[in-house]
Image 1 (cartoon, rainbow, N blue to C red):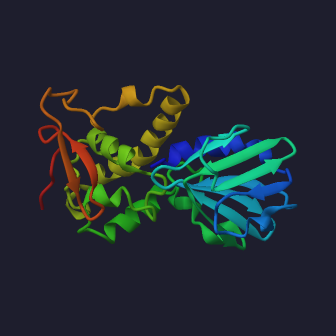
Image 2 (tube, one colour):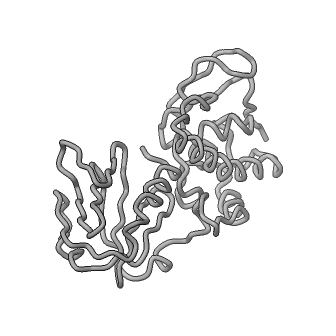
Image 3 (cartoon, one colour):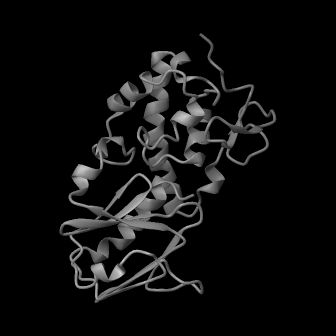
Amino acid sequence: MPEGPSIVILREAAARFRGKTVRRATGNSRLDLSRLEGRRVVSVRSWGKHFLLEFRGFSLRVHLMMFGSWRIDERKPTPARVSLLFDNGELNLYACSVRYVEGSLDDAYDWRADVMSPAWDPSLARKKLKARPAVLLCDALLDQDIFAGVGNIIKNEVLFRTRVHPATPVGNLPARKLGQVIAQASAYSFDFLAWKQRFELRKHWLVHTRRTCPDCGGAISKSYMGTTNRRTFYCPACQIQYQR
């Protein structure tokens, strides 16, 4: 599933369509795509894993889900969910979820929850986490209401960076360690973005899909953990499972 940094890359690539008018809108989406034709893109934005094309009075929200992808000025052999033609090119979106968001995006989204937004508010994340002390860290980091944009790779790498066992309940973490986890959720996302832009993301993974811990040399554990039941990679020797 594309994570926040990948959506930022899409947003930056699609920025060329800001101020441009949709000349034709097609695709196999169940949405009435004709609504987009003749409309001018007011802004190109993103929130967490959501790619957003804003028009006057409404927006198109795109979630790439698990296997979604996009192309600009080229097409895949498979049918596009949404294909938008502009005077300066075309945007094609595949295997994604799309819907309309009515009204202002600023009313629909709290930008303070997006770990890559200039409005990101770590103190708000801390407040939300403290209200959910029984939630495991492996679940908390995937909660888009708290860490919009964080996905499974970022989760695994952040917990290794901070040396926290993924099965640790939020309420068991010392305040300083909780602050480190919150800070790294944003910091690692920007590292992810830089590595992905240089086409070298995978070589920087320390535990995600790895078999050996880069620090102690021990075996990396793989579990399907928490209520999210997502693949979790961690070092049982280096990552501490905090107890009350």
